[in-house]
Amino acid sequence: MTGGPGAYAHPLFDPLRPWLDRLPGRPDGQVLAALAAALPVFTESGLPVRFVPPADDGLGYERRVWERGEVETRPDNWHDFFNALVWLAFPRAKAALNARHLRGIAEAGGEPAPGQARGHARDAMTHFDECGMAVLSSDPSLLDLLRGFQWKTLFWERRADVARHMRFIVFGHATYEALLAPFFGLTAKAILYPVAADALALPADELRAALDGWLARDLAAGSYDAPRALQPVPLLGIPGATAANADPAYYDDTRQFRPGRRERAPLGV
Image (tube, rainbow, N blue to C red; front, side, top):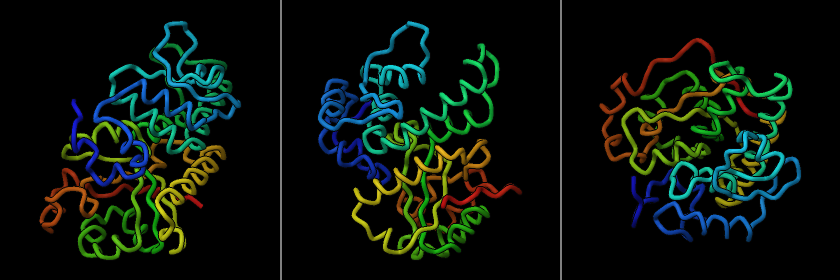
């Protein structure tokens, strides 16, 4: 997959816009290293984060972050490139995810052997790290529709309300990679936040910083302890995410807009 002019044009890239606008349309490791040095980010163990090539030393990805502040970043790799940018955009939440993984490793007495399960909590953290999103709304009824999988009612019948009262903020680095060439059925796993109207009116950088704190708090508290606690959101249903969803018939395709499950994802506080 290649970048180039317009690689980051999709509006769902907006949380990373302050960095993307300063970068070439390709995964440039040297630029990332310079950004990390200019804007220090720290792990919960107190170490400055550095983006480094992978090392085959048996330490393990999460433990290397915790013990050395080293985030493995393969050169010329979009997946790792976006992971690094999310560290810059959401440093507290990323540090909280790493700390929670370390807590899970300690509780299990070490990393599981190959083929063994890591546990629901660590699986949930990985889901959110890879394909997570936060959905903010100043209208609780819109969050109720989303939690109830009422996609057409939400995204079409209440389209104007969604634009006015909701924000969809991508966190997961695998989702950012997928947004370079969005595909049918692309889905995020969301944490939902009811917020006051004045929060949605904040400048983008202030809202992102506030969300970083909310996520860090909730992840550190042990919330979202299983993958099914995260709310699926079909990204291409978000108004404006694709030109095709300007037609109400777009939301009738149940391959992408699936009916709901019985469990309801909890709300962030």
